[in-house]
Image (cartoon, rainbow, N blue to C red; front, side, top):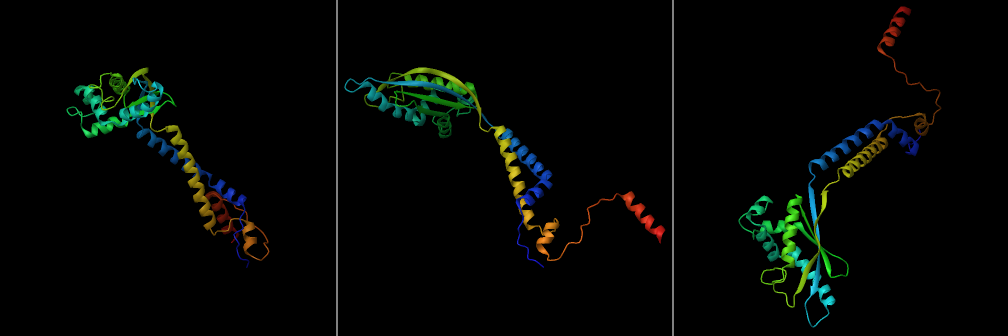
Length: 260
């Protein structure tokens, strides 16, 4: 008897996978369907509103452009991360709108409300310029637009006593709005089509991997070549695979009984 050296060709594996193609298709359908449903049921839609702000220095001793460029990161940090600025936004929002948009109705300094507002505001520098952009995202376009308008009003307020942007800043600059708040439309947190494709691909890969593992651990004789690899004896013939229905079997048994 020969020792099985496991020399199976890629063709053998492909043929075995093709014989199990129904399992692969089923796994692809299950994977794609489950990922698609997950994306649909766990998807959140966000509306974004953006505006552009321009910084201009009012210093009489230094270059206006130089001071303006230096101040851009400072103002960006205040608008996106200053607790005083965010509290001023919530105060300006008013009790009714705070309750309407899911913030603390009675306490503008509520920590949870301030953290939520901070997560909604993002700033972006426009290259090496004196201009930067503010992006506000919310679950409704109305909320995003309302907060953007308040951020704009507080940012361009020129009186330091009323403006959290200018407070405690030496030799302040002025900020003007060069691109009024405008909606960027809605965006989904999860792309259902992408999740569907990932599920289909994942189902195919996992099913093929499972079939591949089963193929190499399956010790059954699959074809004539496997016999020739494992046994050092001649093969005299091969019994073809045939399927007999119940009527044929009955007729055969009756014929055998008649001959007896």
